[in-house]
Image 1 (tube, rainbow, N blue to C red):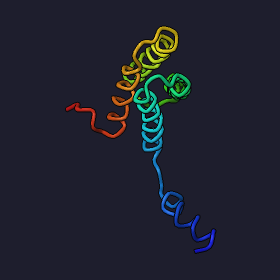
Image 2: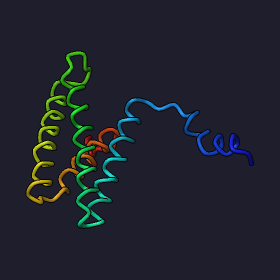
Image 3: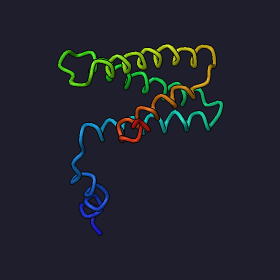
Image 4: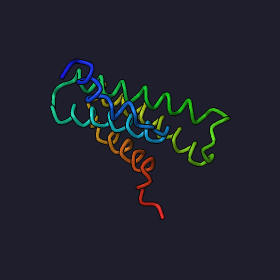
Length: 124
């Protein structure tokens, strides 16, 4: 198999897939949450944890900037909760890095958001 066919085989399905913004958000949260979990599982790998927390903070900064935009179509109550979670993430991330607090709450928040994005938040 030549290089072109190998590339098509490797990337063909992904390149042809159509992703909704919601699916893209879910995948981004999943990727970063996986990195947080992996850094925790490794244990004392502070550089990996710091990098994952940095990326998680960037994700939440972008998310909060989007939800405070007046053109955002989400309901105001949901927007307010997301801003609150963004602030919680910012503050708790600092505690993890400076004080050695557990990163588990950051992971839990991300998983809750992922459930909401997937429509499996448990709400009736």
